[in-house]
Length: 365
Image (cartoon, rainbow, N blue to C red; front, side, top):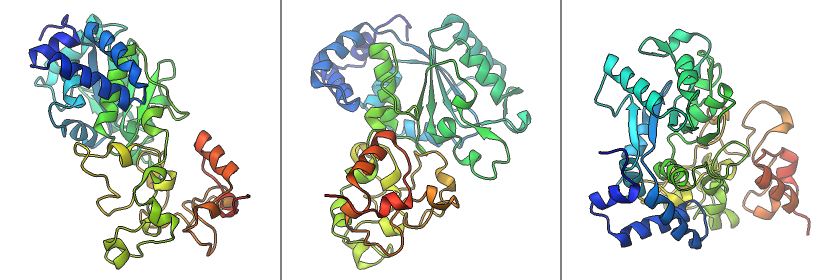
């Protein structure tokens, strides 16, 4: 495929009509929480957009992020965007190997200096450079080399964004995130274990359209996808409000679809688009499938205690400074009893964890 073709040219070659292209632009606007009136502007920008070079580096990871991305259903946003970028280096998806693969990376870097996008999945070990290498190059050295001339960096998955599972205590490899090493480049974190595919491609669509990364929260994540917690958008929320909770995965409450809070659901402290965007082409998400949220898009989620411990139990041994549920035997079904409106609003805006006292304080009228 020629690299000088515009996105519109590429879509036409694939048989996408003008009408289909405009629907694609409208969907992009919706996904990125942009006003509907932005669709024409997106269309105009994408009509002229050229295929950007993308270099994808995989470090300490399980390939789950790539697996998630490839589980798309054509012709989805995922397929259209990744057909329209030049994926010049990717350990799993490229045909080349060995010396030829590294030559492809160097050529892509040289020919697109200052313009290519660097996508990283996996954490970077600092305790010993030999823990993870590619072509004899340590992860940290390769990251610094490729990041130097990148236009922007997309940290895909919780490992790249926050250290993920390799960073879990006692962190034997000294695993760190991309932003712990690279501090002079724009970085967007697309956390999740794995992340939702459409979030990855939505960010790419935004970059293609506006030449910049979308609005980010204080953890570097796109606000459009990580601006609300899963609990507030969960279809089981009415059961939570009524105090109807499943006590086990096979009891009557579970069969009736009651709230999974007591079974360890981390939805109240997890910010992601799972409840609205869902997975497998919008089919479902873990809570809809009967399993509580694990909180995988949050920093240090592996160290927040057992996955099946309710949030009313302190998640970590940090005294009263960090606990996520209701203290003692408070009635957890009443949302107004969790925390005062002011405290809750402040916590949502700042995305900060709250104290036991905050959570157990009754809402003032």
